[in-house]
Length: 299
Figure 1 (tube, rainbow, N blue to C red):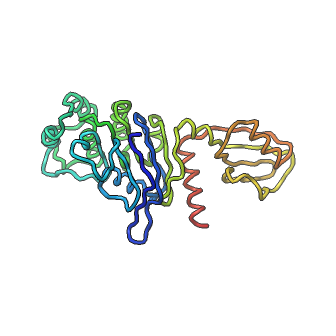
Figure 2 (cartoon, helix red, strand yellow; figure 1 turned 120 degrees about the vertical axis):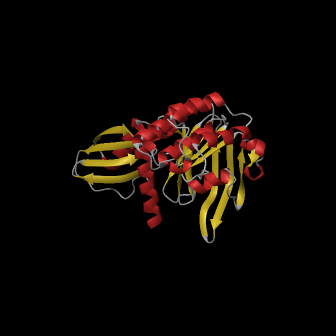
Figure 3 (tube, rainbow, N blue to C red; figure 1 turned 90 degrees about the vertical axis):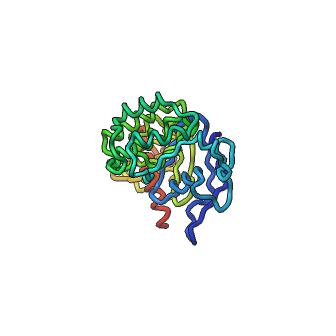
């Protein structure tokens, strides 16, 4: 694993922002970290980059404790944050002139290719950049030395659709060459290139798994009942948001295995039925989990 987090906890005062986090990111993956606002995603990412330190537990990056990362180790780690600061007095060209000597592995040709593709004007002052242009600049800087690990904290936040497409195209250039860990609310955009996903809520990591496995276990289910019924109290806890109206029942099965198993469960509770299932997008799955986390926090 290129990232291996074990039992990490972090508090700010009395607020427990991370609770026993265990996160494993396979090398070569494009790993999405998603969840509610305030779930602890940014805290986790900053801990991985050694910007903050855990109160307990351990995070290994590239096989090294994050608290012991050296200059040589950082030559293999690219980091991008939506709030990243830049030296405002420099132009884009001066900024890259400054960065190149710091990285022995800097790829000048790849830098040139990215700057052209992302339309970064050399003479533009960093202080005059729009938010989208700033994000394209820091992304190019984080990718140009071809790091083994690219850590991205909300790189698409606040970008218009064209700039998002350009940034994602840049990320696709790096996918396969680098392991990518990305925190993002723009789930439709990242769905096409992520291979794994972890969901966080209230400082806890609920699950992590390959995208294909996750998609296979979430299904929207529409049931036609032979008779009007009320919702039983003993429905499986893995059936979320069940709604019954007349002869129709709808819910989301979060542990779908196959239709024969689901048919058996449905007939056990409702007798004669007909039903259809539909796969869900990453965005819809995440919205379902966020609603569940909010409901649990109110209980």
